[in-house]
Amino acid sequence: MKKHRSVKKKGALTGYSCHGRIWIENKGETFLGVGRVVLLQRIQEEGSIAAAARSMEMSYKHAWDLVDSMNRQASSPLVESSKGGKGGGGARITKAGEQAITDFMELQRRFKLFLERETAELKW
Image (cartoon, rainbow, N blue to C red; front, side, top):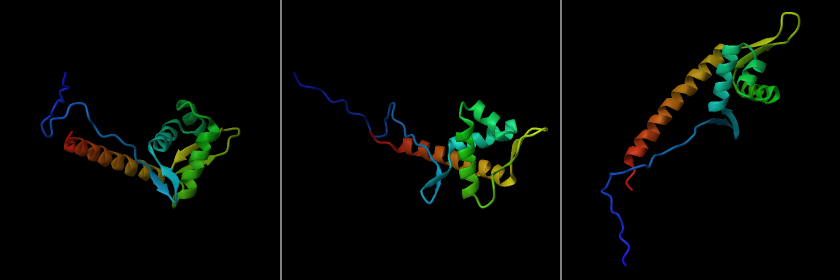
């Protein structure tokens, strides 16, 4: 019994799509990616690194290490923090941090459009 191959017309795709993730590196070290941007947004909402970390089910140390990495790599800090004490500590996103969030979200939007265009071009 012969096996029959199904032949699809050029461009008549069903089910195929392109996917990917994008991040920005600086000398081989991750600077910004989706997770880091979400962390910045949560710090902006929560007013603290600890609360942002909890909201993402992430350890404080890991969140602090990510913030430290971003701050070291940026031309100016993305997050400023104040020590705890009687009034409590906290953290805030700087203007540079706000711009980093905005710029990355725009890059993410363009990347998504790129993937959609590439999906439309698939010919299997």
